Amino acid sequence: MATQTLTQENFDETVTGNDIVLVDFWAEWCGPCRAFAPTFEKSSAAHPDVVHGKVDTEAEEGLAQAANIRSIPTIMAFREGVLVFAQPGALPAPALEDLVTQIKALDMDDVRRQIAENEAK
Image 1: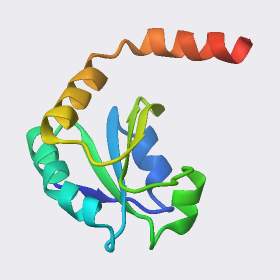
Image 2 (image 1 turned 90 degrees about the vertical axis):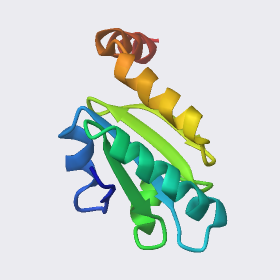
Image 3 (image 1 turned 30 degrees about the vertical axis):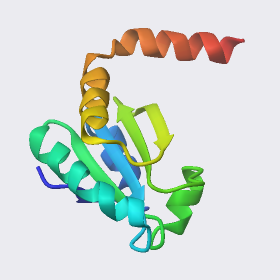
């Protein structure tokens, strides 16, 4: 599956309507973003069950601000609508592959339990 362009209009629906969503926050002028793009595309092709979305931080300033993006590229991963990973910096292909594997293996009942425990504190 090819990467999808995410905007203010479709971001929430994409994140909540799919099991796993990886999001690449990027900008055209960003060298590391452009260098990471082929790695992200290859991951998209290798994992058609995972939505790979890209947010152009220049075109979607409000979305980038809402996501608290301070550095690009930033990779975020959502599982069942829950943010489970966020990290600035381009990931090498093996690290991105490992991330996808770890996200697929998450026990979301345990994740939700941990979130509830932290919110109760």
